Amino acid sequence: MIRTLLLSVALMPTVSLATPVAEEPLSGAASDIPAVEEPRPADTAAEAPRADTPPTEAVTPPAPERPVLSFVEAKEQYELRHIGFDDYVATAVGPWMAGNGGLSMSPPKTLGRWSIPYEGKHRRPLEGVGFYEKLGRADLVEAYQSNMRKKTVIGVAGGVTMVAGMGLILGVLGPKDEDCDIARPGFSACVRGNLDRGDQRLTLSLVGMGVGLVGVGVIAYGVLLNPHPIEPYQARELADGYNLRLQGELGLSEDPARTPRTRRLPGFIQASLSPTVGPDGGGLQLNGVF
Image 1 (cartoon, rainbow, N blue to C red):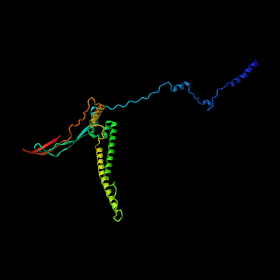
Image 2 (image 1 turned 90 degrees about the vertical axis):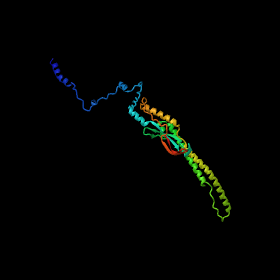
Image 3 (image 1 turned 180 degrees about the horizontal axis):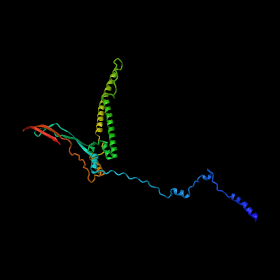
Image 4 (image 1 turned 120 degrees about the horizontal axis):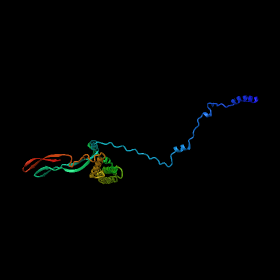
């Protein structure tokens, strides 16, 4: 009994000493490095777009609205941008003529009429291609430029023809005379040759006169050729359509600005004072054109 007790006393400390003690890990050990978490399959599938999802359409931003003009501002813009026409008349005053019992001046004769379009109340001229560019008609612009090129070609051809005719008239392009020496044999033949060449130059001069006249005619045709592809009344119709569209853009359709009216009569006043002599006496006659 006593042996058993002593054995138990001796073994108890040993057992207590063998009890494991929790040790702190060393710094820098593998346990200090945080573990990298790999993405789970569910997360990867959530981030990737689905194959059956329709593509997102690009949203077009709305166009900026035009500022609304007041009636006064719109009317001012119309007055600055509308198209009008200035009319011109060329007249010629004839000499004195006898009639009605005396001498009097013949009435003026109209030689031509033409119109020049303008833009706005300041009347900026729209000559040539500017009128069609203002209308926005590219086809008329091309037609006008083509006609202008045709005028240029005709004028150059006429000028070259006229210069060639002048050369024939002056004998520049004709045969030249030879120097005939009376001391040399064949003097008579040389003189006869010069006479024949003189006849040739005369013929060429007459031909040159005809060629020169043809050149002058070609130049005159090129100058008088009208490059405008439309008639004057068609130009006025296009201008009226442009003015109507401009009124609609400015919001003046309901109460449009007054369209400028062109003068029906020529824009000039011509007066002349002429003496008259008749059986009953004489006097002064005042002639006026308004």
